[in-house]
Image 1 (cartoon, rainbow, N blue to C red):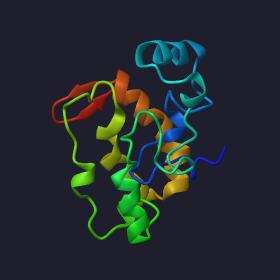
Image 2: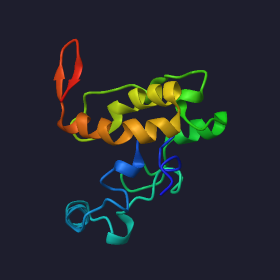
Image 3: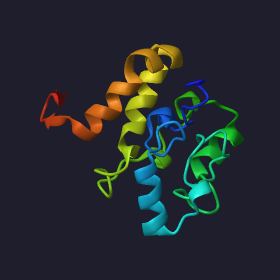
Length: 143
């Protein structure tokens, strides 16, 4: 598995996502199918870049962030002169369910230490702490 290819330009770690084909459980597939009516063969995601930003959980027209990265000719948003921009603005809406508020942090780390080191040292722990860690004012995440 090439984790560089499975890192979305916006900084999301597709390879750690529960919808990614290698992580998707039969139980989650069934729940999505039953609740949302998504055909079973369309539930597994292969990563943003492999699917050109088109998947059932994204807007039908695709991902505007991916379109922007392509138009600007950069690999990741942090490579852009306009980083960070409104496409990466955090919101409280559904933050407990979706990891999109991690994007800017991930991109800053990618810019600082490089994609390879970020994949090795950072990517797995960040998502786990995001969903299971505790926030301490003035200190950030606590284990």
